[in-house]
Length: 65
Image (tube, rainbow, N blue to C red):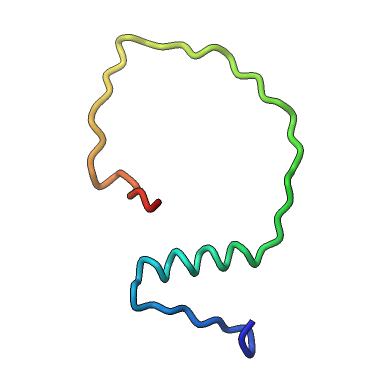
């Protein structure tokens, strides 16, 4: 850490700055693998009468990577 708990983020390229900052902050948190029981899902029931409408572009999360 730089003096007093502050970090400097190079932000000429805002997109890269946000990605670098997010990655850095996530790396500061300890993490460990958690054992979980296997999940048994029932067979999927498909309804042919279901109408799928197009997703509006403003509802799509942009692909960063």
